[in-house]
Image (cartoon, rainbow, N blue to C red; front, side, top):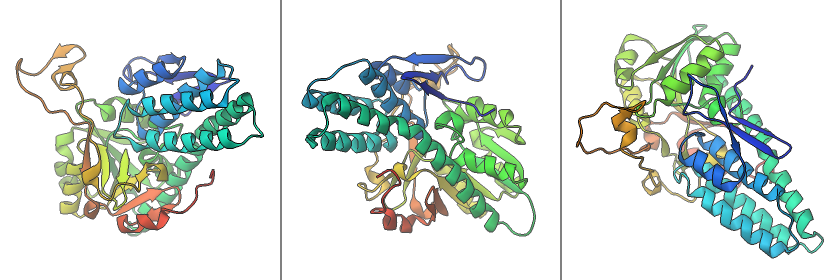
Length: 357
C-alpha cells in the first residue's frame, strides 16, 4: 500500500509528521492556516508539491468553517492567508505558484456578479481540492516519462542502477512521487537493478524517508553517506542520477536540496547523465537564472544536534543553507508531466496552458 503523507476528506486534513519517521508514524491534525504554516516551516511536511497542497488545503479547512456574506471580505482573507503561507518556506516555488493561481481565481470570482459570496467560496474550495488528484496524475506522468527517458539512453537489455538525493516520493507529494516515482516505475517494469539513496545531511531525508519508502515498496536499494557519491560512481556503473526540484529557473538552473550541486558536478566528471524530475509548477519563468533564487537558511541546531544530542564542538559557527543551485549546463534533461526537455527548451513551455486552466 502506498504511503500517504496527506489525508484529506470532508474538510478534515491530517499530515504525516515526517520528523518522527521512520521510528514513529503519527498524523498531525491541521485545523487552519496557522497550523499549515507551522507544519511546513517546521518541516513536519516537506517536498515542494506537498508544501503547496498542505498549505492550500489548510486554507480550505479554515474557509469551510466560515460563512461569508461579502465577496470582498472573502477575497481579502484568501489573499492575505495565501501570502502568509508562502512565507513558511520561500525557496520552494510550488506554494507561490499555487497562491498566485488561486488569487487570480478568487479575483475573477469576485468580479463575477452571478455568484454569491458562499457560491464563490464553494467554487474556490473545489479548485483547491482538485489539487490533490492533479498532483497525483502529474506524478504518474513524470514516472512514465522519466522511466522511458532512462531506458532509452541505456544500452542493450542491461538493468539500470540509479542514484537519487533527498526525498521525492509519496512523502513529498500527494502520492507516488517525482524522482522517486521514476525509480518506482522502473522497478514496476522489471528493469531496475538497484537504487542508491544518499543520507541527505543535515536533515537526513534520504536516510529517514527515502530509505523508508524504498523498503516499503520492496525496491532493491542501498543507503550511502553524502560523501560517498564519487566513490560509488567510480566503483559502479550508474545509468543516471535523478533528483527533484524546489524551483527551476527559466534557463534550467535548478534549486534542490543541499548537496545536489556537488552530485551533479561528480556525475559530469564520471559521464553519468543527471536528470531533474519536477512538475511544471516547479518552473519559475519569472526568474531568468538560478542567481535570482532565494535560498532558505535553516537553524544551526539542525547541524549541531542529532536526536537532542550535540555532535559538534560547542561554539563553532555554522552555515546551513537548505538548498543549492545546480547550473543548467550540468543537467542532461528536465523530466516533467509534459515530457522531457533540455534546460534550454523550457522556455517553449512558458505559454502552454495546463489541463486545469
